[in-house]
Length: 106
Image 1 (tube, rainbow, N blue to C red):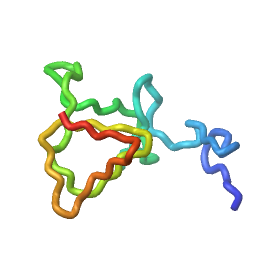
Image 2 (cartoon, rainbow, N blue to C red):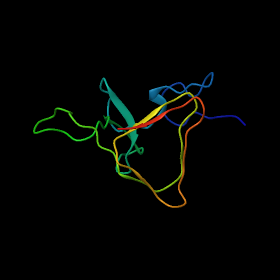
Image 3 (cartoon, helix red, strand yellow):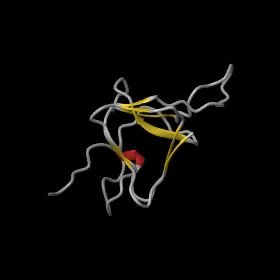
């Protein structure tokens, strides 16, 4: 199947896509991440990565996570995961931790 260039940029070459090939609604900023945003023209936008709660200003001091696992999850191979607890795993949901991975609940 041949791929066709739709908008600006160089199209897909050698399995890579350049930013110019994507329809992003703003310009990149260092340390921002590309994220989905339904109100953005092309559905993509550069935004500050979430690091949890913020203090009185813009300082990112806390990392927040949910307290209940509602759907099954598998820790990615060769990766570790951390969660602040206590944590409840709902009935029917499982967290799978492979032999090379670790899940730490603090």
